Image (tube, rainbow, N blue to C red; front, side):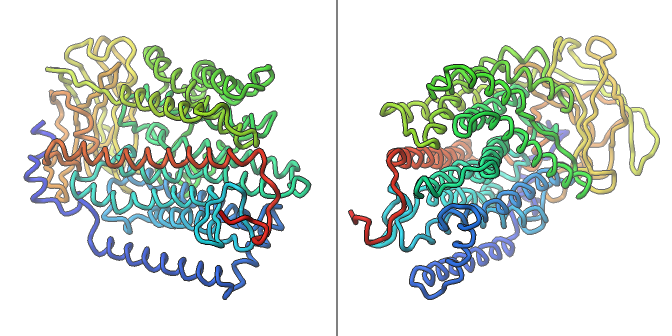
Length: 614
C-alpha cells in the first residue's frame, strides 16, 4: 500500500483540490440559488394575485396543444426539455470524469451547468404545477395549502424529487471536505443527485394522470400520438431507473459485475410491467425502443461530437418482449400477479436475452460463473419490484390500489429485496499474500509512453476458471491521447499468465492498473500512477519489471479519498443520505396511494365555488 499513496496525514496537509470546491464557487451557486428562489416566489405571488397574466396565457396555450389542464400541460412541456438537459449533462459529466479526472469545482466542468440547469428546472416544473391552479381544484386528491389554494399531489412530488436532487450539490461538497473526492457514481451524495432526477419520472406520470382524470371523459385525448407520448414517458422512466448502471455502461464499474443484472432487472420489471398495464399492446416494446433511442443519441453527442469516452447501454428489448407475451395470458387481469410473474420472467428469461446484447456490445460480458449469484439476487428483486409495477399500473389506469395494505407491503418488500441484493453485491474481498509480476515492453510512441504488458499471477490460480474480468484499465489521461480512457482486455496465455492485446499508456496524467474480479474477489495492482500535488500523492513509476501486491481496488480508483476520520463518521453520514432516500421513496408511495384513493371516482374539474372547503 505504501507504494500507491502517501500517508493520509500528508494527503490532508498537501490537499488543495481533492477535498471540496473552492469557496467562491460555493458562494456563487448559493447566491444564484437564492436569487432564483426569490424570483420564483415573486412570480408565484404575482400570478396568484392576478397581477400578471402571461404565465396563465402560456399555460393555457400548452393546455390547448396537449388536451390537458393548463396546470398539468405547462409543467409537462417544461419537463421534457428539463430531463433531456439534465441527462445529457449527467452522461457528459461521468464521461469527463472517466477521461480527465476530477474537477476543480462545480463551475469548472461544462457538464455541471447542464446538470444544474436541469435540476433547477425540475424543481421549477413541480412548483409550476403547484402555483398554476387558481380557479379550480386540481383533482380530488389535491392538498389544501390555504383556504382558496389547492395543489396537485403530483406537483408536490415532482418538486420534492427536484429539491432532493438539488440538496445533493451542497451535501456533495460537504462530503468531499470530510472524506475526499469519491470518484465514483455510487458515492452517497452522487446517488442523491441522480436518484432525485431518475425517480422524478414517477411524479411526472402521476402528474399526467391527475391532469387526465380531472377532465370530463369526453374531453380526454386518446389518439395514437398521445399514446406514443405516454409510451415515451415510460421510456423516460426506464432511463431514470437505469442511471445507477452508468459505470457499467462505460466499463469502469467499481463494484462487482453481479450487481449489473440485478439493476437491469429492477428497472425493467417496474417500468415495463406498468407500461403494458397502462397503455396496452406493444407499449412495453415502444417504451424500450424510445429509451434506447434517447440513450443512443446521448452517447453519440458525448462521444463523437464532444470527444469524450462513449458509453453503451442496456437494451431492455428482451424483457419488453417477455412482458408483451405474458400479457397475452389471463394473468393480465390480475395486476399484482401479472407484476409478480412478469418480474420473475424479466429476472430470468429477460436477463438471458439481455445477456446476448451485453456479450455483443459491452467491454465485460457476463461470464457463466456469475449466473447463480445473479439469479439469487435478481429473482427476489424482480418479483417484488414487478408487483410494485403492477400496482403502479393499476393506479395509472384508475383502478385504484388492491386490498388495503398490499401497496405498503409491496413497497417495503421491494426496498428490502433491493437493499439485501445491493448489500450482497457490495461485498468484495482482497486476497492475502497475492501478487502480480508485470513485465512491460516498450511499444511504438503514439503521443506518449506506451507499452505491452505480460502479467503473471501469484498464486497462478488466483483468477479461477471463469473470472468476471482480468483487464488493464487506463483512465483520466486527459486530452493528450484520444479521450483519456481505454480498457485493455487481456489474452490468457497459460495458467495465471496474461498479455495485453493493445499497448497501454504509462506516463502523463494516466492512471493505469491491473484489475481482477472473480466471484467475491475484487482487487487490483497499480502499474502507473502520476504524482498528484492536489492530494499530496507521489508518483508510482511504471517499471520495466515489477512484482506488486494486490490491494483493494478502491484505493487506486478512488485515489482522492481519505480515510483519516473517525470510523463512525462515514457510517453516520451514509445513514443520513439513506434516510433522505427512503423519505423520497416513501413520499412517492404515499402520493401514489393518495391519488389512487380518489382516482376511480374523480369528477371533472370544478370551479372554486363548487368545491367544498374542508
